Length: 137
Image (tube, rainbow, N blue to C red; front, side):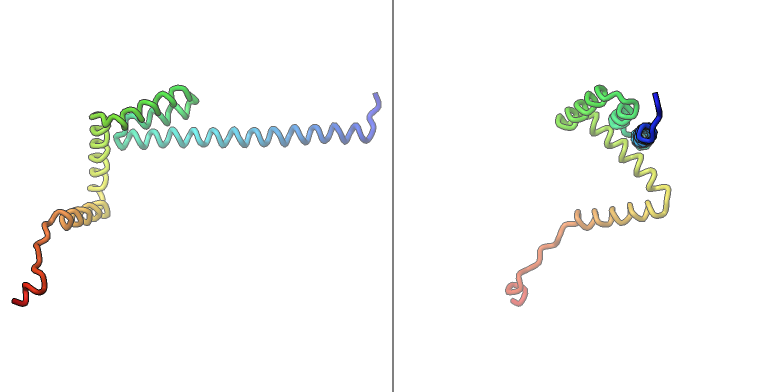
């Protein structure tokens, strides 16, 4: 077989296409790995906040257990639709954890003070005022 210029160009183009395809595939693989790492970090953050069910969902995604992830989504949806006590308890735990976090900083305490002041204004009964015609009498 004789190597002609056209054969060398075809071989070079095949090599270039293979290199570009490999580079693109590695880029996509890195994107997937970064998404999965982010899912693991999010699961850890949610678990630290007191969530129980959502971290399992993100961990299943991170390890590629899509059937487990789908099952977990169904369980979360059923519990939210049913108003389970466990959901309320989980929300209460998360609230306590976030409240503790906010109480540790001056900014957090100021946020809580302002929210309590707003709540006091909403809860305070409004005294009825007399109509203008009655007040003039």
